[in-house]
Image (cartoon, rainbow, N blue to C red; front, side, top):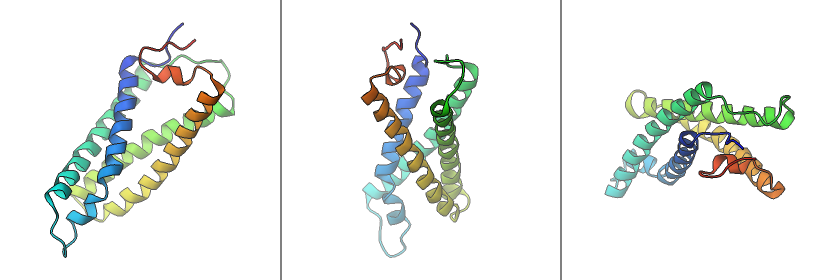
Length: 159
């Protein structure tokens, strides 16, 4: 029995998940810190800073995930890919692309060109759609009681 993903890949996955939750939680502080009619609170400034730095961290972690995906090809469950495997691959690569694009556009919006914030927000909607599909698929695999989820949990072996 071998695990599909390495411990490092699993750790990077769950670190990105936690950082995405933090991004969602801190995003509301951004417009409050840029409103010319309101003085931002210290909490808003702290959340804004955390949002920026955790966004850049997501960008680095996604680059590492993609590099590891190329360096350590995960074992395949079957030789031929069905529509579900192809769909999963599209969602994974879509998540990598949108998260990298969000990190990039967030950096550009914060430090170079503020209008990039509109693009950053639009990409977030695509990212949330892909996350919804990804989580729905995970729930489906849990309901089926197959070994797919076990491949992304630490210390669990996939059959």
